[in-house]
Image 1 (cartoon, one colour):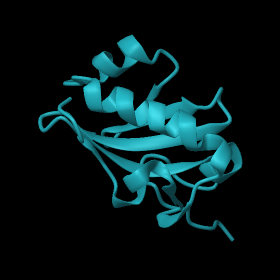
Image 2 (cartoon, rainbow, N blue to C red):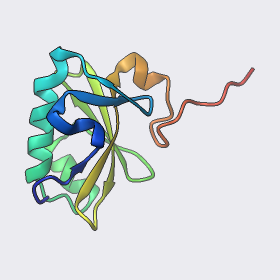
Image 3 (cartoon, rainbow, N blue to C red):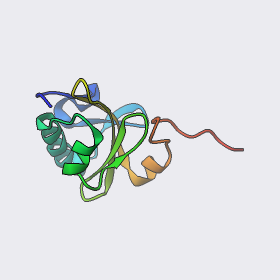
Length: 115
Protein backbone atom coordinates (compact mmCIF):
# COMPACT_ATOMS: atom_id res chain seq x y z
CA UNK A 1 0.00 0.00 0.00
CA UNK A 2 1.49 3.40 -0.90
CA UNK A 3 2.31 5.86 1.87
CA UNK A 4 -0.67 7.45 3.62
CA UNK A 5 -3.21 4.90 2.44
CA UNK A 6 -4.70 4.55 5.92
CA UNK A 7 -7.60 6.96 5.82
CA UNK A 8 -9.22 8.46 8.87
CA UNK A 9 -9.21 12.12 9.63
CA UNK A 10 -9.26 11.02 13.22
CA UNK A 11 -5.86 9.33 12.92
CA UNK A 12 -3.90 12.48 12.14
CA UNK A 13 -0.96 12.67 14.52
CA UNK A 14 -2.05 9.20 15.74
CA UNK A 15 -3.69 10.59 18.87
CA UNK A 16 -7.40 10.88 18.06
CA UNK A 17 -9.29 7.69 17.22
CA UNK A 18 -12.77 6.70 16.11
CA UNK A 19 -14.88 5.15 18.83
CA UNK A 20 -18.51 4.29 18.05
CA UNK A 21 -18.36 6.57 15.02
CA UNK A 22 -17.23 9.63 16.97
CA UNK A 23 -13.70 11.01 17.12
CA UNK A 24 -12.21 10.92 20.59
CA UNK A 25 -8.74 11.16 22.07
CA UNK A 26 -7.01 7.79 22.26
CA UNK A 27 -5.85 6.33 25.49
CA UNK A 28 -2.13 7.14 25.69
CA UNK A 29 -1.31 3.49 26.37
CA UNK A 30 -2.59 2.52 22.90
CA UNK A 31 -0.89 5.30 20.96
CA UNK A 32 2.35 3.51 20.07
CA UNK A 33 0.72 0.22 18.97
CA UNK A 34 -1.70 2.21 16.79
CA UNK A 35 1.16 4.16 15.22
CA UNK A 36 3.01 0.89 14.56
CA UNK A 37 -0.05 -0.61 12.86
CA UNK A 38 -0.54 2.53 10.73
CA UNK A 39 3.13 2.42 9.65
CA UNK A 40 2.83 -1.26 8.68
CA UNK A 41 -0.46 -0.72 6.86
CA UNK A 42 1.01 2.19 4.89
CA UNK A 43 3.83 -0.08 3.70
CA UNK A 44 1.60 -3.08 2.92
CA UNK A 45 0.22 -4.08 -0.46
CA UNK A 46 -3.10 -5.70 0.44
CA UNK A 47 -5.01 -6.62 -2.71
CA UNK A 48 -7.21 -9.31 -1.14
CA UNK A 49 -8.12 -10.60 2.33
CA UNK A 50 -5.55 -13.41 2.19
CA UNK A 51 -2.78 -10.79 1.97
CA UNK A 52 -3.87 -9.46 5.36
CA UNK A 53 -4.17 -12.94 6.88
CA UNK A 54 -0.66 -13.77 5.67
CA UNK A 55 0.77 -10.98 7.85
CA UNK A 56 -1.84 -10.87 10.63
CA UNK A 57 -3.00 -14.42 11.31
CA UNK A 58 -5.25 -13.32 14.17
CA UNK A 59 -7.09 -10.76 12.01
CA UNK A 60 -10.75 -11.55 11.43
CA UNK A 61 -12.05 -11.08 7.90
CA UNK A 62 -15.71 -10.03 7.99
CA UNK A 63 -18.30 -9.25 5.33
CA UNK A 64 -18.56 -5.77 3.80
CA UNK A 65 -14.75 -5.67 3.33
CA UNK A 66 -14.30 -5.25 7.10
CA UNK A 67 -11.27 -6.56 8.95
CA UNK A 68 -10.75 -6.70 12.71
CA UNK A 69 -7.21 -6.44 14.07
CA UNK A 70 -6.10 -7.03 17.65
CA UNK A 71 -3.99 -4.14 18.94
CA UNK A 72 -1.66 -3.94 21.94
CA UNK A 73 -1.60 -7.59 22.84
CA UNK A 74 -5.33 -7.97 22.15
CA UNK A 75 -6.30 -5.17 24.58
CA UNK A 76 -7.93 -3.15 21.76
CA UNK A 77 -9.80 -3.91 18.56
CA UNK A 78 -9.24 -2.03 15.32
CA UNK A 79 -11.93 -2.32 12.65
CA UNK A 80 -11.13 -1.17 9.13
CA UNK A 81 -12.95 -1.20 5.83
CA UNK A 82 -10.57 -2.11 3.04
CA UNK A 83 -10.82 -0.81 -0.52
CA UNK A 84 -8.53 -3.45 -2.01
CA UNK A 85 -8.57 -2.10 -5.58
CA UNK A 86 -7.56 1.36 -4.39
CA UNK A 87 -5.13 0.11 -1.76
CA UNK A 88 -6.81 2.14 0.98
CA UNK A 89 -8.06 1.14 4.42
CA UNK A 90 -10.59 3.24 6.28
CA UNK A 91 -10.48 3.12 10.07
CA UNK A 92 -13.96 2.52 11.44
CA UNK A 93 -13.31 1.90 15.13
CA UNK A 94 -10.54 1.61 17.66
CA UNK A 95 -11.86 0.47 20.99
CA UNK A 96 -11.72 -1.96 23.86
CA UNK A 97 -13.30 -5.39 23.65
CA UNK A 98 -16.29 -4.07 25.60
CA UNK A 99 -16.76 -1.24 23.09
CA UNK A 100 -16.34 -3.68 20.21
CA UNK A 101 -18.99 -5.94 21.72
CA UNK A 102 -21.49 -3.05 21.67
CA UNK A 103 -21.46 -2.67 17.89
CA UNK A 104 -22.13 -4.67 14.76
CA UNK A 105 -18.55 -4.95 13.46
CA UNK A 106 -19.68 -5.55 9.87
CA UNK A 107 -21.51 -2.26 9.76
CA UNK A 108 -19.87 -0.36 12.60
CA UNK A 109 -23.24 0.44 14.15
CA UNK A 110 -24.84 -0.37 17.43
CA UNK A 111 -27.23 -3.31 17.10
CA UNK A 112 -30.92 -2.53 17.29
CA UNK A 113 -32.51 -3.20 20.65
CA UNK A 114 -34.70 -6.27 20.77
CA UNK A 115 -36.89 -4.80 23.52
